[in-house]
Amino acid sequence: KANIQTTYTVLWSVVNTSNDLDNLTVTAVLPSHSRFMGNISPSDANIKYDSTRGVVTWNVGRLPAGLSGAPGKEVAFQIALFPSLTQVGQTLPLVTNMSAQGTDLFTGTTLSDSLNLIDMRIATDPNFQEGWAKVSP
Image (tube, rainbow, N blue to C red; front, side, top):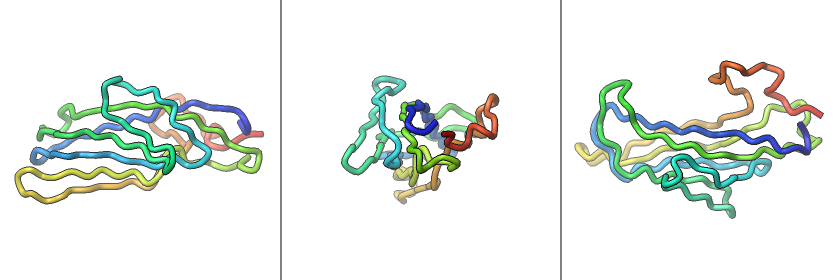
């Protein structure tokens, strides 16, 4: 709802099926209508928030190679969404400009991947209803 806070939990998972990676970082930008809440799980995860730039950075560090489907590393953090009345009817992004980058320890090359955004349309939530994807008055 416009002018009302809604809290979301962002879950990042990294899985590596090739060579060991090092200096792995995952970053994202929070839009101006979102706020980092500081709730992180696990609590000792190396997550930093730069409030000046709105950037969340997870310093994963080393990620050993694993088989397909093998556990990687995960972190969750909460954000609050504060939509305005001018955003009624819109589907807003929760996080944007996500990227992951690390060094392949076997080849020495830098590997990276990116995703443009995650928005209010949470297709992975089994209870999600389409009407929830837009700001209401």
